Length: 420
Image (tube, rainbow, N blue to C red; front, side):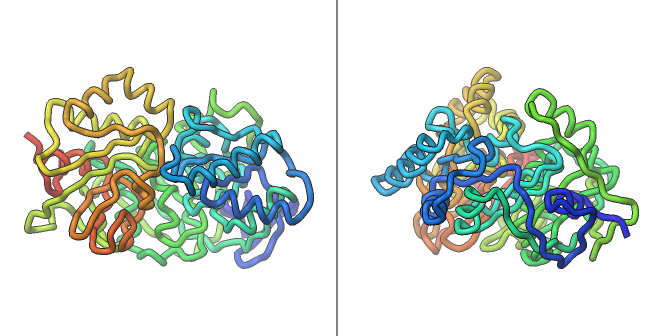
């Protein structure tokens, strides 16, 4: 029996010829990641081990969740990370003004690459499957040990094959694809499994689409969401990744526990209703209008340049509806700078949006855009659990940048075709 993409990466990093689902393996790591929330407890674990870091070029520390520091506690957390990075000469440490959202900047800077094995003390580390790597989230204890040893143990996951066909319409993005998938299989439909994407429809997805889809694999319970290496991947990593890399592809007789088929041409804009990412509905099927108070465009899910372009093109020449707040958060300094150069930031500000420095901010209820009781938000973030963005009686509706921008203009959940 052949191996799928996840199995090939784990086998290589375990130093063995093959692995199978359910097998326990210890693997050497290519990259270890933590942020301002998860790094401090990991550092405490690391210091208890009493060893030097395994490789100062294979650790990334990205203070992005409560940064720029919103209060004294967040400043203290940032200082712990900053001091550790300077003490150990961490190559991939990013201070304010040079930092973006971790899952935006690691692919953008070529820190993650095809065939790599990455762990991060953040659940959305699965983002890097978009560039044909195996990446997954871990707890701070495992992360602290990994900073000392350069290794981690894994239970080889079963895999679900997601076969994509057709081509998506112009008002469909990767967010609609992944929300449709989660709505179909449920938030635990891929529990401790890898989602492996395949089919001729993959070629119809931009790298931004793929990064969004892989990012939200965890919302289906998956350990990873991995795409095949193709011309689009190569075009993205060339010029970014400076080290040698080895792409992987699934064998023709690879084993999967399930296959899910999605026809991209049949997709319509969707939103995930409170309070689960799997509670998806087509916007056209909502019925009575749902008035909103806030729109968030950004995050590690949808804070890339293409997301900014989509939103700016819809908002340009329009105004954000009265009584609606629209907050736009570019995912990295590079995204912010290019968005300014292309006139996207002008379009946002002219429409009445607030444009923020790169940060996770409101996604996790950190700061900026926190809601009070009874308020509703359309957000391009990845989770809409009760109380996720503020008061437990507020509501978050997850959507892609098309629906988010249109909703900001009309003051209700809407699609671009409704914007006159």
